[in-house]
Image (cartoon, rainbow, N blue to C red):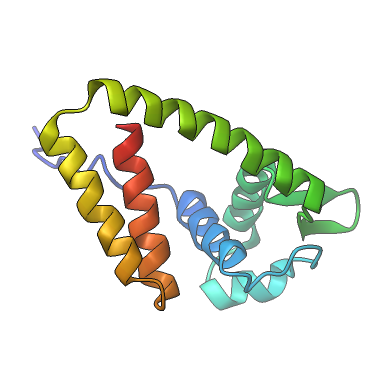
Length: 142
């Protein structure tokens, strides 16, 4: 019987989807731009099949728009859409903050305060700021 426990491995298309997702978030793939399947599959050294599967995943997430006989495009988001999303996020996070204020232990509150201080110190470092900000919000939601 095999003792190989490598359950953490991902399918190739999932890895490709993650790479493309990061490129979209980093604005390397610009909203509204056409995704050149040939170029990307050559760049990643893969066939177009896992790339197309990855694009389908990103389409279900709303990051990519598939157009008949024209291919895939990075989804454009309007200012109204962004405002609506941030408004909903602010409502959810304010509710979560209220729950934390009622139920958090002193140690949990202190941990959040330390992360907040780290955010203040990271103001000039965009990458560190976003990393710490994400950690702060994840801890708040926990």
